[in-house]
Image (tube, rainbow, N blue to C red; front, side, top):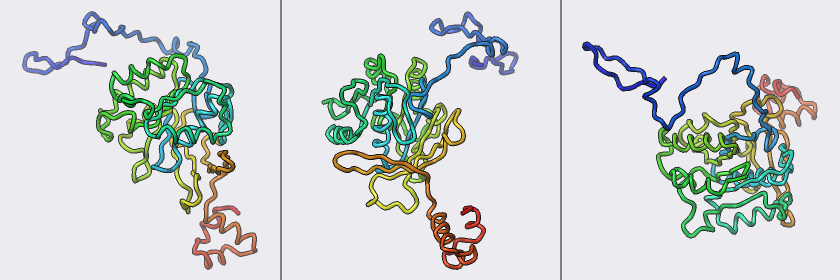
Length: 313
């Protein structure tokens, strides 16, 4: 409930409630409904643009440290949604219109990556590109009202807006301050209210968590972190783990972490995926297959007997 500033009455500070006729005329009056009426209301089920985690009229985020494959991941998502196709463990039931707003990559680099995606159907216009590098004046600051209105002018009929990335497209305010993000959050919610899904790409900090205020996560339906597998070396190329850090309405297998790998051969990006394999677990499995006891494994590897037994191999 909102209050006016305290007024003095007989030396005691009291808070005066707003009356209905004192509300700003630009705001519709509140209309509470009973719990019974609310429970009897029919709401349409939200389908997924990409099963199981990217909902219609939803807000999602993908974050990772620099060089971990964020843009590769969201390009795969964009192409799958636009074509009604599969990407990794995910699938789109039907084609949807996608707007990719890229504020970071040079246009030729973005073009090169897209041409490597064999799932891309270049004959469809479902995937539209807004590239900062194709504009002499760049993409306006989307943290401002003018920038937001500018983008809204071209999203009619768009189902999914991908914003890559938060740092380059939203340039005003302080990254670590929750108050600085409030206007951005309000805008994202308004896009959702108007039937849009938004996927925001963001950087992780040194700790591995998404960089800046955690307020960004409050309204997100899904938050995905990409991270390198244990023991990863740069020569392995594009290889990362997919972890669901927040997933509303998802349970069980849908939110299990997994590993993704992309190998480029003959100018085609070939994606594969599988379960995350713990290095210690794999070592224990190999030694057990060779007939070693848990005590022998502990002595030769330093992996405690109790830990080795927990791997259930």
